[in-house]
Length: 205
Image (cartoon, rainbow, N blue to C red; front, side):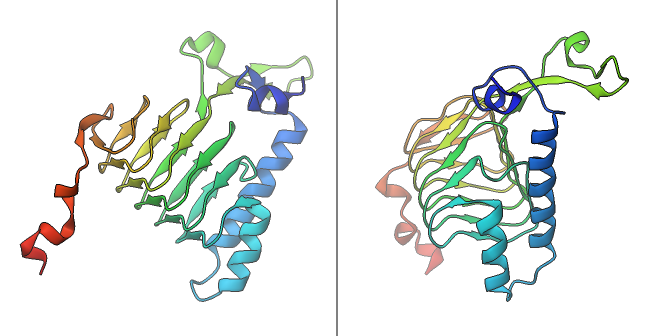
């Protein structure tokens, strides 16, 4: 297997190989290009995202600034939205359903590192170059989810359709469909029901 194949399969891999370094550099440059645009430059933004995130559905809107590690290993459904400071480290596949909303400062992070520092620390090759080993786990997000401000989603997590994740949560384990979950580590608080309708909140009218 190549290092890229190992990475996508969730195996230990060397992130310093030229193929992966060039892919990251390209994604980082495209992220910077996007961040340098103005909101009204719709066509310019669209063309950048077509290169950065080729697997995006219709009507994707990223407020910016954004930062993607690869971009091409992230899939968006239709009508997704992310507010300021959206970060995606897609060393393993990230699959996001339709109508998913992200508040400001949300992070999707698939990479994992060894706990033992002797395995985690940088090492020298015979030619003096530095490298390290790491691995990653995929992340899957169902349709119609909402992530409030400052949520971090860790590698290996699946979040079910229609769930809401509270502000500042760190999602380290699977979350079922149709629930409100929050905390660090994130845990299910309760089910979402018809009683949560904004039309039942008289103070809003």
